[in-house]
Length: 383
Ligand SMILES: Cc1ncc(COP(=O)(O)O)c(C=O)c1O
Image (cartoon, rainbow, N blue to C red; front, side, top):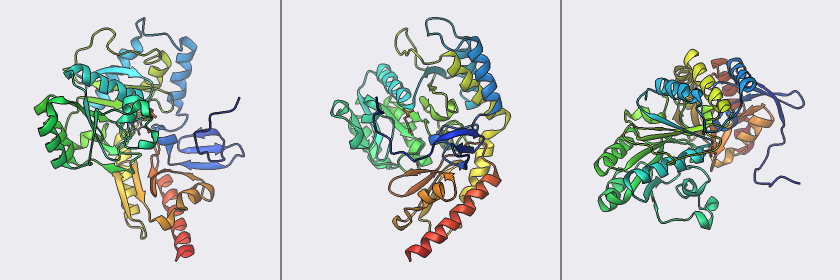
């Protein structure tokens, strides 16, 4: 049997990892500024995380949601405390797309409406409604197509107001990433998020903050939406939540009332997933990782902005996009194969930095030195 070949792969096998370092099968060390796509939040193989998961696995790894799992309540309390939303309610699931599906479904149950506002450049996942709300027709199968999604230009308050004025009483939810990830590290402005909040209040629509990539402390706030000083009705989270263990969730405002059977999943909130998520929050708290992410991120952005030849540097904390001219399209590849540094990308030519929140200033400097050297080499070759 062969694998279904859907991923363009780098010819690298990772066999060992610690902190922000990974090693390949030949023993070559790499600096990881990609975090396996914003997933590694507290660093690879963090000792506290490994210990907690191992201990849990030796007790019980899984049982279904048909019995009490006290770890779920412990996780809800810890998440409420660290995220500053102690009065919210937690539903646990397994992936970012599933979190968004559940958030959209919850919104529709709540106000009994069907329309969803999403934005140009958005990515919300690959399952039915999440992919329909994603701005990439190539990955929307005919079966996912629906007239229920209204795509609006990003950060355009007038278009949003006009849409609400015309059909506000049909709109179940507005879904928005605080900072678009796949879209190329594009921030929603403070005033745009505030406008979403006030229109959702006015029309009783649900504000869904997709925090799957930009959440979990990465931007220097627990949720990047916090930056705008607004409370969303539902926050969706995944990637950094389990530091690599598949776990996701939605944090739900008190006004939503659950009923048995309303949402559900087999694997969501299992013992191991909760142990992983608790370990992550404990480390975030113990090591002050939210302010560390802001500090290291501010330093990186400040230094990157000084470099000539870069179109733009966007983002906050450790969610950074370096927009490069088309002529410098080899930089990302050379960082990996010449300098042994993993970074992410976004189209057309944006390097995405999504490292662990534990990244040190020294590690940031290793990247900056390599990046400057690579830019100089490329510029020489091009001009
Ligand atoms: C903002 C955002 N939402 C949702 C998803 C989907 O998450 P998953 O791949 O875990 O389904 C992603 C994944 O990249 C994402 O970046």
